[in-house]
Length: 138
Image (cartoon, rainbow, N blue to C red; front, side, top):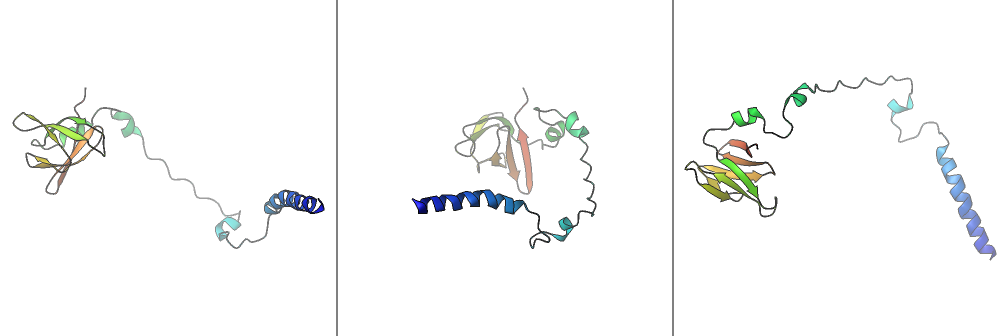
């Protein structure tokens, strides 16, 4: 019984004294950088945030007009994305002849290869060219 009380007393003393020992300020800690050790050093002013005017001017959910204007005329038109992204998703595209075709990643149509899919767009490549074809709005 005496050994149990001694162990309990030591554990209680450790639980009370250890946080107090950690709170006592020490002189020059070995892992403390020199810049933090000197409180008289002024802090640099934070950089100005970027202007948000462009973010407020564009549509939140619609495709950007510049993005649509930058698409080559012969790029496939995206009709839809079907399936689970990252698993079995396919892109439904309208070909130059006007037919609709389902493409898996890696397949080609009209010289454009489907490189990737997102929930609202498909990424096609042709040589060094890479385009993002968004789903039509509406």
